[in-house]
Length: 384
Image 1 (cartoon, helix red, strand yellow):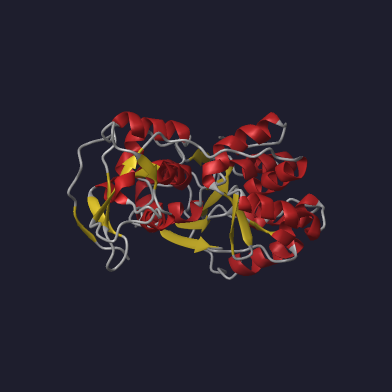
Image 2 (cartoon, rainbow, N blue to C red):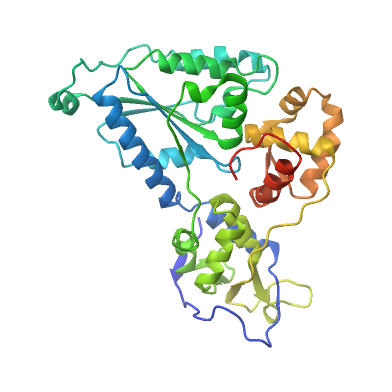
């Protein structure tokens, strides 16, 4: 955990014309990236979910036999909705019994066994909650403690292959046949578009809410903990200070990142440069430096290499499922693992995808351009 001290806050948004800016050493940005990972969930995300869920719960409690008993929270494929949902429930809905299921669930090697996995997990909860007798009075509502069942990642509950979405059909049946509980599902827009095509998921889960795009002001407020303090890079190393940026910078960052928090963090890091005089001839931070000042420059998206057809199909599967193993990618594409191995290596080397253990996912900074690339090539895509 990094320590912080009161900032010697710089009011200059841009360097003097005579000052040369260069890319910051990777170690400096890695330190800042670790701090970024500790930021809380953006408040507009939480507020959007809380408002939509409050309305949906109120309608359902007033008429549980006829009102929808589910809400689907939709985000982009490069956003992990699970932590966002947990943060949204953290202090709200204390009058409800909230149960989280399938946290960290990873699809089994054989995707056709997903329905059995889901049944074992969800049917452990065999005690049915008390139902609200109808007609419902205000006293009934006040005395009843609703049960909210939260499944944070529909992407892991199926695989795009023959008979691969039976897990989703199981969840559809389970939730709609039991109006005594309210269900909240996390899902990305690309998954939602695909599942609508193959199993008409929106006919079962009619209520959805999309995570909003963040404005420049909202991004600035979210990043503020990193802007108001000096950050320690290591136990005995220099401090980091991010120079204050103008409102036009934050608006540019929001536009470039399409208002997506995960994309904005990567674009923001890439936009930070260091004054050349702070580095040695070898490009390292001078040993005598007590404070490293990082200066925001124009936010830009990384370049995208020319993709071949296999790349597009591979990336499309990754964006539908958010993250996948190589074996599941091969099953989804109907290809041998050895055939996709080389393309995964190329895409990872180019920084378009990342690997964590055995699982691959798309780098958030590349999402806006991939959205356009795949859409222009007639792939079924979700919301930008």
